[in-house]
Length: 262
Image (cartoon, rainbow, N blue to C red; front, side, top):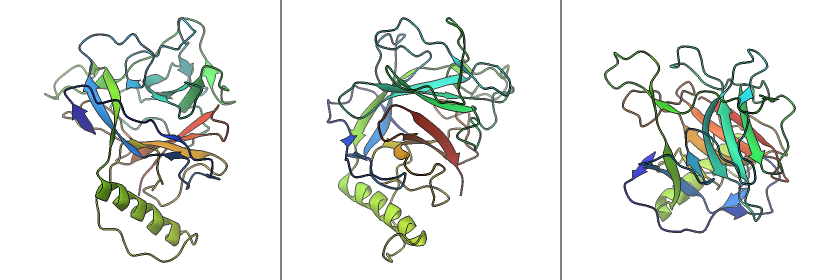
């Protein structure tokens, strides 16, 4: 993921296309790349970010989510602006192994081990469990670079800016999506793409490591995050050396999250 040292310029936000019918379509355009900007002080405004604790407009606090399998609070990863006029945010919570250095979230998007909660005014997924007020789990962390720490990692907090992709890179990603559509038998034959690919982004035509979305229609593709499992990464996320993907319902009020590997 790109790291910025200065604030990104104000840019148009992705907006609903109104043409997507499922998770392989471009539900939101333009496609924009995520860029981290380290926060020098605790973030107190409710804006897109990878941060330590969620803040919701109109609510003083949000109870953390607990997977039904264990009852333990999920890790809060970050919050992402939902495209559209309603100014909602999608809050991502993932289950983590007890040793804090293994895969996060699970492969089943409806197991309760990964929750993408849309607020304010969104629907709580039927598999999600809400903790009592004041409950919160672990927040985003970075592994000890020396490899000799206590295994707890260091809490980190970032602003999450959106920056445009170079035109050739944006086209390359569309070509990758078209190639996968051909392999699924949903489009004409195209050549194998040989251009670059940005793993961390929002909007645009999606491509998945396995070639297929991990959720069915009518869910619609929202964003992608690469895993970051190494000590020199700015934060820790483990998707089995794959990528994680957020999806929204057609009305934008409910989310799903799934990770995928080749």
